[in-house]
Structure formats: C-alpha cells, structure tokens
Length: 216
Image 1 (cartoon, rainbow, N blue to C red):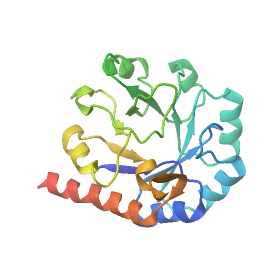
Image 2 (image 1 turned 135 degrees about the vertical axis):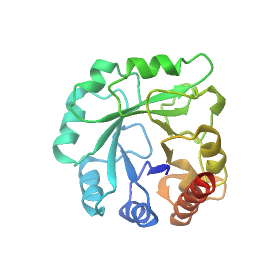
Image 3 (image 1 turned 90 degrees about the vertical axis):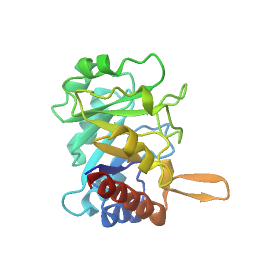
C-alpha cells in the first residue's frame, strides 16, 4: 500500500487532521525562507500531540549541521528529509534515517543519485523549479523516473486529490508526499502552511481507492 506524508504542517489542528485521516507521516519544515517554516518550540508541540505510529519528518535545506543537531535534540524526529545540495557525507553524519530530495528535470541521472545516496532510506522526487527548493505546487514529467530504482521512491511535486491516482498508477511509488495540494485557499490564493482538512481527507481517500483498484 502506498504510504502518505502530509508536509508543511504548521498548526495543531492540521497535524491531528492528517493523523485522523490516516497519514503515515507529517513533515515539519526547518527552513526559515519557507512560508511553512516552524520553530523548534512549535515542532515540539506538534510532535507531542500526534498519536502512535505517525512518523515525524524534519525537512532541512542546506542547513548548518549544528541546527540539525539542535532540532534532533529537542524534537522527536523519526526521519530527516534533506532538500538542498547536501553531499552523501553530510546526510550520513547525523546517525538518523534520511530521505534525499532530488529535483527532477531532463538530464538528472536518478540511477546515479540512488548510487550516490545509497545510505538513504529513499529518494524523494520533486519538481525542479529554479531557485526554489520545494513546495512549489509544480509537477514534473513522471516518465523521467527509471522503472527500477534501487531505492524506494517518495513521489512529490504538485500532487493533489485530482492527480494522485494517475501518479500512483504510472510510477508505483513507495509513498506520496503532498503539501500545497492540501492547503486552504482564499479565492485563487493558496494559504501556504494552512491545511484544509477536507482536502487532506480527499487526498488520502483517493490514494486508498487507487491502491485497492491496483491490488485486484
């Protein structure tokens, strides 16, 4: 069954909605330039409120190692998500399971990435938008993903309840990751960091629906 991560959580009610709807993990962003950034104090409260068996993922972008260690010391992270230009050596230094995010575009050798980051628990594949490390709401060409990557694929980038079934059917990822696709909006403006419980439920229900269909 496809695992589900709801990323960019900033509010208690959104963390609890994700858990209640059946998310396997939530993502907390420790990147100050992101509108979804949380403080260590916020993250500690969010993690403490979660029920058992919901993983907490800490997202960092080219962070100083000292910051990662400070967060680790205070927030019960289950997994790191390293979303910048981190080297394999940097990623492996924290003695914590990690995902390496790769921004996919034509010419990116994902088999080489899997080899370079062989110590990762998986590759999180996101859209490449120049100058923005993630959370863009943009999709990418899923056909660029090799059929047999040696690491689990966590598919990200512009997913929502409308396209996640097609994404799972084509890519067959280990997990899907959504942020902007489940956020609230005012008119045409997305409220970054503010999730919509109905959208979370619709996304998770759609993942479960296509999983059942594909298992028949």
